[in-house]
Length: 115
Length: 114
Image 1 (cartoon, chains in turn red, purple):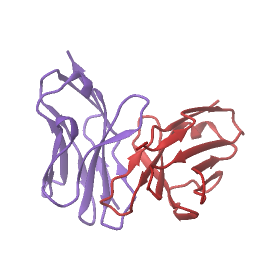
Image 2 (image 1 turned 180 degrees about the vertical axis):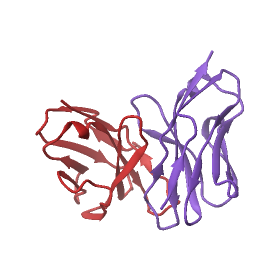
Image 3 (image 1 turned 135 degrees about the vertical axis):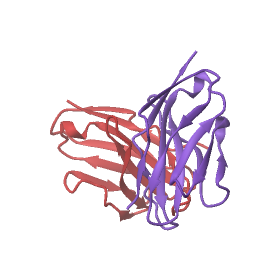
């Protein structure tokens, strides 16, 4: 059973470009979460999605960031007009159900570098 | 609101020595607690979790953690460190059965000295 898959693993963008990060959850998992890890920091929750629905985006910056989880295909985290402060590792996690006791399984992350 | 404090951003132990990584949490409701390990340039792997059953939780790779409500702590231990344990360890909390947001500590980097 393949784990959570993320691509690309590394992404370099210049200021003002767009970044698209993809996440395929584990088979059978319909709950997807995105977290951001800044240097020397723990992971911070960004958004929680189910198929075709954004359930909670309280951790997303108000501008330039968006996320989707379409009926078919991976979940996408999109960052428009990137700035240097967006440089971070972005992790996707998935779970078979939701709730505080559920284990979230993490992907290897996408490391974004903005030049 | 919930929060996690990990005491010590870096911990060094000798191979074969006891590993103790500290985690204190705050939560307004009974928490669920997790320890994850992150190897360089990899994702997070679950070591163990506490979900209100036994207070002493055993995980993978010989790690265990004890939930102490009176101390609001969930420290991670391993009796004998191995070189392969060198990694970064994150403690995380979620509050309540309906809470899916994990709040992470800043992490503790463990070095194992041969």
